[in-house]
Image (cartoon, rainbow, N blue to C red; front, side, top):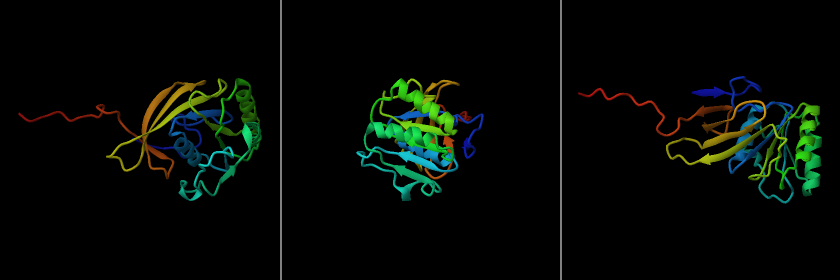
Length: 199
């Protein structure tokens, strides 16, 4: 089964992030999930990375069309980072704000970010450390890469474990890192096996 997820909101799309809200992703695969979301959001993109983190998105290695639209911000300290996130979420032309806060997001900070996203009509995605999210977040995703020698691209396990306005779920997907389409992967042992017709 293949889902083409180029549209911003598709009712049957389990990976659509509600616009005008702030979401969270945690786990070692959170940056891949952020890139997947960046491909799906048309318009300007902002990625906010604290100045002390050396790993930055490599513009030439990003999916097609993302590098040209992506703006990187490098604030100093957590206070400046939260201010930068809030102000960017309020910037109406921005389609998606991805940010990597270093510390725990308090309920107050989470609420401020939600209000900023509503004011700007922007979608926010916070890439958080395990257990460092805010109770104010709309959804929280647990994202892991899964080794698979038989796959031609990296498999990802995306688990939606918090959702204020819908159901939760868990998906194994095969994403090639270049387009907005993913393939759903059956869990081991769940594939249909033809019946043995030998006498």
